[in-house]
Image 1: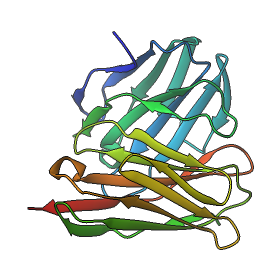
Image 2: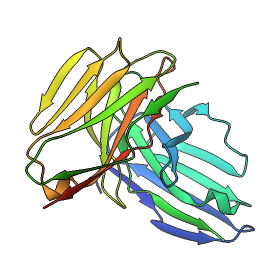
Image 3: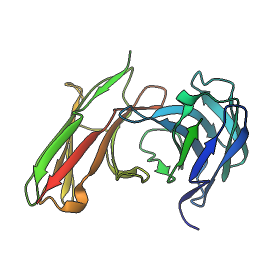
Image 4: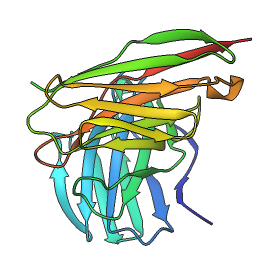
Length: 114
Length: 109
């Protein structure tokens, strides 16, 4: 595997379900990110981890819970979601978080909440 | 508040040149990125500008004017595979990327 991988690629869940999204980066990077991408809207940054420590949480509802066990893996745990949470969830990584550090994105998980 | 503006959609002809503009108002500036995103795929990095001027990379060039809060992405010799969304993002004073909604570029034969 190379780059940034995400599983599953597609997920359909009910509002009472609990599920987790997984991201893995094979680039030796130190920072990892979760983004939400809705149609015709800008990417919304949800969480940032740098050296496994959460450095940003952009007012994300508690029904989204991130976990970063090491610099290569990032999870997003989902519970009691709402239909408006349906979107593409993108994971990204970068060498660092300062200027000039380009982010490498995974293919995303297309989430549908019924 | 922070804001990135770019056109929603543009159409161009194969073999031609197209310029996609991006204007921004952010709290601080630590560089501007352009990404390409094909439908159903991950965004991929195209360019990074932190100083004023033009950066050329093959068929793609990116320009920045910090005093005007303005950038553009120039695509030359357009190919059908260039049909995609182009995302402008600015890194603010907290080193967070502020994203535009993207410009969908449609290439016609």
